[in-house]
Image 1 (cartoon, rainbow over the protein chains, first blue to last red):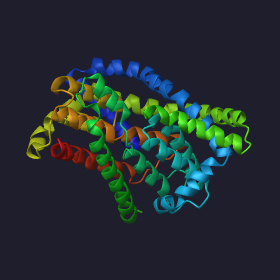
Image 2: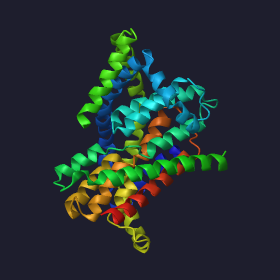
Image 3: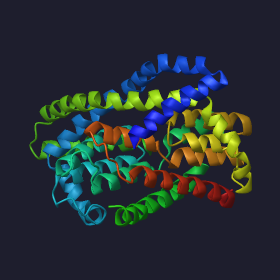
Image 4: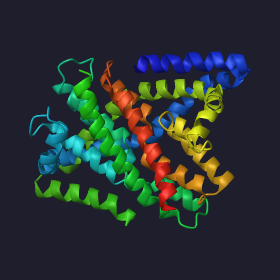
Length: 192
Length: 169
């Protein structure tokens, strides 16, 4: 699937660029996109290293296990395939918590650890497991309750009430997350 | 309030580690080393998605898609000024952010469109990036229904955002 999208983006972009005469812009992007990716990568690289360091303290001290045990009654409904006490539950809890607190940068390393850990439970290593899809859908649905970046940009742009969007954002996030959970259950029943 | 969250989390983790007689420094270094490996392993996925989405965006195809869908949007009473941003939101976080700033300067931060753009940016995520990053890093090829479902959720989010701004403001 990602294969097809990746391919179509490139082919459609280049053909459309040739037709419309935008090919010089496309050419420029091909030259500069690697540098842009590196900038994005360098932006999150130190955060990933830092947060995995901090999280390992929480793993070694048993704090992460405590948190995931506490959240287990809720998590086992979402992730029925994960056995109780499995390390992935700890990473999933940290990822969700970081997302809710609006710490998007810290959420990524926890999410990557969660996926790695879910992969160890996965029988078919090339195919997404049920828990992975649920976890991904939770992540793409937003989860953020405090949109800090948007609030900052709104106040920089002289909004009279920069925080006025917090309530609609929370409601939209809740609606998205609930529909993600429902759609996940639905799709899982229909598409095996 | 916001300034207290991170210090509190770090404080809690370190204190709990010491109480449980953990060598917190060694744990940190061990985790950070593993962090370097994970971080490096995600670079190809980032590069791949940025490369292909930048080609598509720079070709002007998105603008073409927007203008050809305009009659349908009008029929659905979907604010057409928001459409390019809504279309790019799942593909590129930076592109949709700059479109949001564009809407701010054209129509005003607190305008109807400015409020929709802010809500949209804050409440949805860069779906395609998250999916390719998370699955790409662990080498999953068959992603089953995850992309359709995620994009459908994004659509629900966009419709909810527009409806809510209409109701609240």
